[in-house]
Amino acid sequence: MFTVDLKNQLEQYSKEVSEHLVEFLPKANDGQAQVVKAMRYSLLNGGKRLRPVFVLEFCRMCGGDVQKAMAYACAIEYIHTYSLIHDDLPCMDDDDMRRGNPSCHKMYGEATALLAGDALLTHAFEICAGADFDDTKNATAVSLLAQNAGVGGMIGGQVIDLKYEACDPNISEILTVHKLKTGALISAACLLGCIAAGADEEKIALASKYAYLIGTAFQIKDDLLDIYGDEQKLGKHIGSDAENDKTTYVTLVGAEKAQKDVETLTASAVEILQNFDNNEFMVALSNYLTTREN
Ligand code: GRG
Image (cartoon, rainbow, N blue to C red; front, side):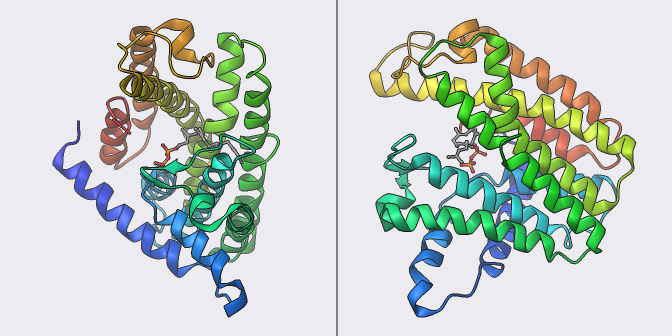
């Protein structure tokens, strides 16, 4: 459940991030306007803006300039949005809807959606490289983004996940997919905040541990919400088989233990936040994620 302050602060962050996401978009000639419209559509089609908030909050907790970190925050949301556009395409999950609205390819067609995703990915690096920090910081940020979005991170996780559609993964294999497919971008977000603030190695190591724990909890919660969504659609009770018979953390351990694990992982993540000053917002946000409904 939200406390009022957390809700207000998240809304404020979300508004500021959305404004910058639009402001940083590339300028297009008439002939290219459609692809920028598609990028804009998906960027502004809801979303919790968690990854940008992680960037800005880790920057703040490490004593950095939050406004300057906005470029890194937007870069990561561009990459997250590209991944969702591509994930919805017919060759991937083939989803007509995203966040209750038509997915990008349903609005703009497959070719434009594919290109909008590509353009968001590319643009993320341009914005990150041109942020108002010195070249060393920006180069570190670009490299971190590339590693976590690429084969060693999110893409690698998606590839393994696709493979597991044909054979049942065990818990350890599922946790590896979580770490790469979901955790890598969350980790990049927390570390980008640290880089923006010029944090020391100790803080960076702590942020990395926090990101692993909260990223794992976040994906298990996502699996729980998926099952709940499927069961609502099918009129079933929690704990029965979901619509698609995919093996997930929840189908292996059961909904009750999965929720307990979300809470235990989050408690450990919150413990790590005790090493940071001005951590109240992040503690509240982390705890809220255990009870989130979307
Ligand atoms: C590049 C095709 C391609 C895929 C990469 C990230 C990904 C793999 C696929 C997207 C679908 C998915 C379920 C990913 C797992 C990570 C996750 C839970 C994403 C949703 O994140 P939220 O809840 O999204 O932060 P909002 O809608 O709030 O922005």
